[in-house]
Image (tube, rainbow, N blue to C red):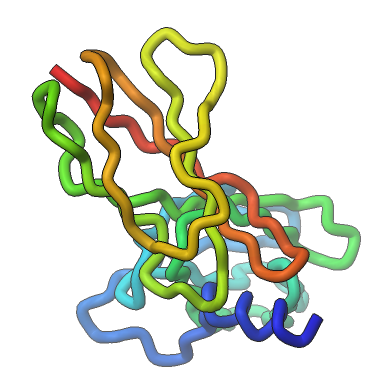
Length: 189
């Protein structure tokens, strides 16, 4: 269990000082709402999400293995991710307010001609993790696995035909399996 937690913290990093060029996404918490409920951040140290308490009482943000207590008028530390994923979080002990932080995979181009491979990146830090990467082919109902339990953090995908594809990934650390990232779209012409 200790290894899982250590590796998880490597993939989700609390940052008290985000670089000056960064523009973290801010989520507003009031006594009744969170806004926006769904945010997307890039997979790097220059992007992230923080929660600002605009309510009149202390609120608690629960993100997997850690919790922030945020006093009225205060802002949490910025959370950044080095791996693609979809992260659910809740606010307060009753956990009735739910939100999502999306960290999409990266691709070298969103459109290419048939016969040209795409370079996919699903993590910027291996952190003793393994990764599953899937693609949804044009007109298909489900996803097929491109890479299973790979420790590589990037790979190439050569689509076999023209059309629109969806790519998603997830990481596994010990017994913890992350949710699949929000799919990205690539087009082959």
